[in-house]
Image (cartoon, rainbow, N blue to C red; front, side, top):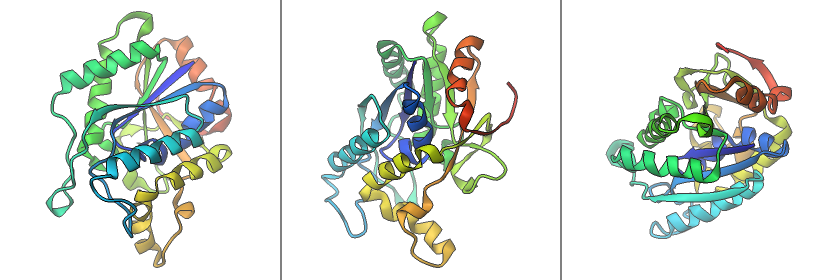
Length: 255
């Protein structure tokens, strides 16, 4: 079985989805990673680890490190440029040409012969426009493929009532699979540690809430969730979800 996880920026693949992808890799699945951008618009670290001009190249290397930690089968980039954060922390998408993005993603799905596509949720998690763009393009790409080559479509970080950090979830998406990813926690932690430029970002708000400076290892989420964003062949869906069945905290939502 082949899974493609598609995301907007380096670190999205790990923060939202790293444990589930590592569990699938442990089960013998080919897990491929596709990033829309190289994260050129993100933070450079505190203190800075690289210059702003070098950030895209540096974050690409961080992502390669993370994919290796998660036992990914391949990593590729679509080559879009991540816009800088605007005034008052305004966030932007990396493209307005949805037809082009859809076509490029559909080509990748067909070239890799992907069985399952996993991407951002409908709300863009905390509302990031680039995350929403990935979700919309994924929906369009899956819908453009007919017949047996059409992949199953799941999204990560759907909401469930006792999620430890509900701000990072998609409030309009139902959590169909809730996973205990502790068997892959060491891999997920190693992957998060790869993203050195983003460490201060990872711990900033949670440190403020805790009243002390937290280590990156303390904020790694041990439970992840998936939403069935589109129906697919029952046999293929069952085969995929059976790979994660032993890690279910519980199964929720409609079948």
